[in-house]
Image (cartoon, rainbow, N blue to C red):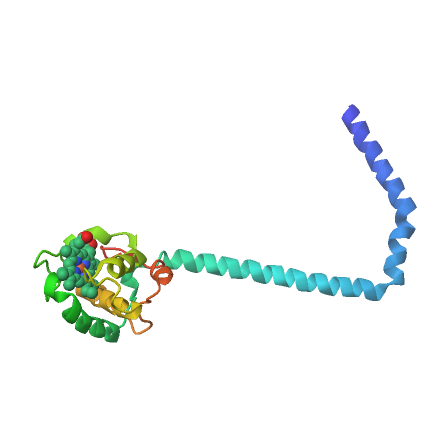
Length: 186
Ligand code: HEC
């Protein structure tokens, strides 16, 4: 009961306020139609900008959901790059890791389940870091980063991951960290 009365009196007050303030509301709008027009335009731009941003964010989210995290199955190196890597590998790595990357003279395999088990679900940046910091033993870091990336391409190819026409495997750790080594084909 008291609630209804409160509501009614609030409404009455609002009506009174509106009546007394009416002139105040209308006058600026009538006196400065240009200003109001400008305000409307700028709000229109802002609204359109906000809608644009919202659409961009939604698109980006949709794309991210479509693609999922980027993996070695996405085609992350080129054939030419892997061919250069194979030459470097034969020269610098095969004496220990074997011509076919299968365990040889006291060094682990760089192909097959023994190898993929170690790196499965890990960012590729870790593989670059390991090789750069340790290989060839005693001459770690003796190759340039793009050369290490070429050898990684050859290793990826040997393990059956597809090449692409689009882009070479990056030689920068941060970029490689955006690619995940995933053993099983999705
Ligand atoms: C003198 C022998 C020798 C040479 C040459 C050599 N490696 Fe190795 N490599 C090893 C040994 C031994 C290990 C195991 C050491 C360890 O795991 O700490 C190893 C480990 C690795 C691993 C880690 C394997 C795994 O299962 O995770 C990679 C990758 C690798 N080497 C790449 C290379 C590359 C690329 C080159 C050429 C630039 C190279 N190695 C040259 C002996 C060698």
